[in-house]
Length: 97
Image: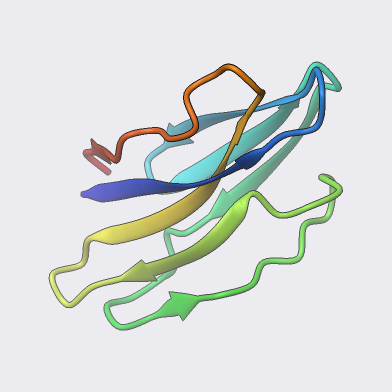
């Protein structure tokens, strides 16, 4: 299982971060720039925690942290960019993965 929560912050005007998952590989895309980067969490084992990821393509890391609990569930905190007038939070998501 993958549990996703979001760290909300104001985004750059006209920009969005889109996320997609394939198993335990996250692809983050900066829209409308079209820059994408994959983050592979499949090698993480129970007890592993990642607190900092240095991206190769994106100008920032959209991953705040990732960890695997004792049951093997992946917990990931991602950036959620919002603009003024939009909801300032996003609910937690749960995926099979």
